[in-house]
Length: 131
Image 1 (cartoon, rainbow, N blue to C red):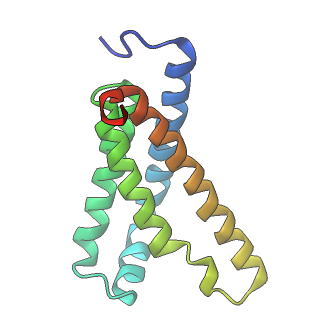
Image 2 (cartoon, rainbow, N blue to C red):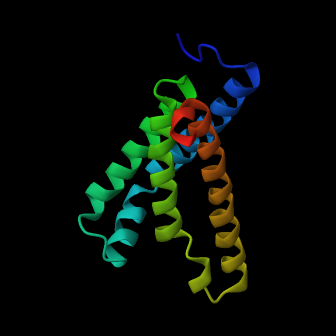
Image 3 (cartoon, rainbow, N blue to C red):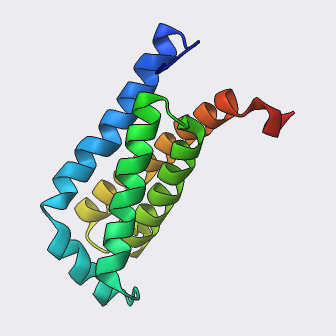
């Protein structure tokens, strides 16, 4: 049922990707009000709805990838979520403090690497799109 036809290493990879997004999502649930305030300060319309839509993408995508149920679609959700997180929260190029700049640069490029892994998953699940 789950992970049918996947190798052990593919399963491990998908579970690791899912664990990353799900555990970060659980942590960020505790910071929800802080995120709503930051969205409002950035001029994001309907900041609370935007935040909960982000959580929906993050948790649905993470579960989808982890359980291998429509994993390519789940990976697409996670890519959209990650791009938005980078643009909204990890604007390292705007920071003056060198420590904060380095921390957010690391988050930003870690997220770029996550997007790369998600693209590989999509290519494995939807090979017809890339032929």
